[in-house]
Image (cartoon, rainbow, N blue to C red):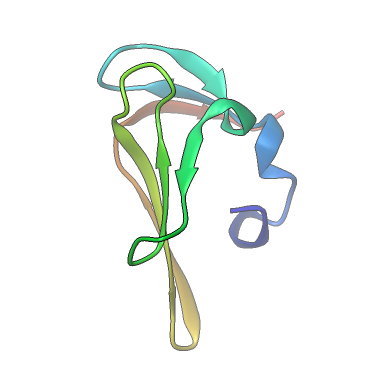
Amino acid sequence: MSLALGRDATTIVLECAECGDRHRVAETRVYLRCPGMVVRCPACSACEVLLVDRPRRLQLTLMSIRTLELP
């Protein structure tokens, strides 16, 4: 995610659209053995981010995120 955003992603604060939990990306559960990288809410396991490395591009899909704060 840091590569896609051009900054350290671990300090980004997300608010889950499903449960309202606010947390840093560093606190999420990340799964790498998927068709891409999946980032899940630590409180309710909602899928918040999907990052897929495609030929000649990165695809970043924001899913269950109400807000994303860049420090």
